[in-house]
Length: 373
Image 1: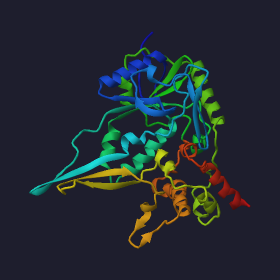
Image 2: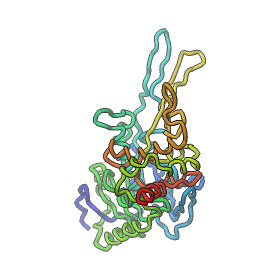
Image 3: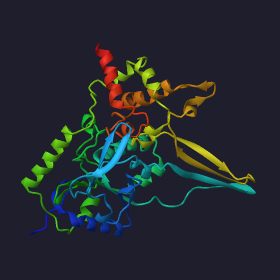
Image 4: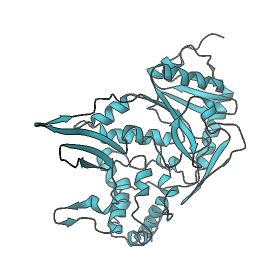
């Protein structure tokens, strides 16, 4: 069979075993291949060498405050939804050194000299693709670009996987972020029983699959993929009506619902840690006992932490009610003014991993119900 003429946007059928070839080629180019792995009964982002490392035949069951892995009943590799981890950890690490200062007569400041790692991210869900685009807006703005984020982002290779099996807390369809990836990937896969439907999204992706035994994705295969995506839209575990957001949030800042949620919320910050778009951070200094060396690190922070809003004169958000309202009103309100999009991608992680089962979709519905009554 003649080789397909490859271009950005080309759609082809890829035999499943050939995913190993793609991973091998990526490693030959210096990438560290990372994908979904099972650890401690949950999905994490870990090193993978091939198909054998993926969670074949497994899926996950989620609800508010609940997550468990169960057999899927088939032999697919990407039927399992992500766990608590998101891909932002590779661009915006939880802890990273900014500089070290050493005193040797005078103070000498040294910045980390290691180059940003090359990471190929395998199995990035459409909601996470959208989340990466949102973080790009925060860290690579026209007026300021974070060099640590920029370098890691430019060194990444993204292999998206369109989602045919959303979880019980997913609502990406409501947010327009899935179940099909909307660009900004190098390669995208849709997994059928026997083959992957592959889409080329960049010149880098085109180069990786050049010369591989790709076949045209005939109408029957594309129809199966389209039917799977249509079924996924109907199987979303949650829905969110976003028609009048952010106005609904910003016009109800004194609504009693905030107090009702605050009585349950523990201010544990779990929702912000698992969220793929949250980007709050702080700096910490560590000084040696003799005072001759100090290191400054950037670490993840959260608007739920009491000290986050502390400034001269006191704390601007002194209670859980004000901190939860800040988080949700930014995510679904003022974020739109800042970046032109909502700050939520419908991944459902904040619902799944909340220890007291607070559900962001229920909070929006409660505000909407009261606004209409």
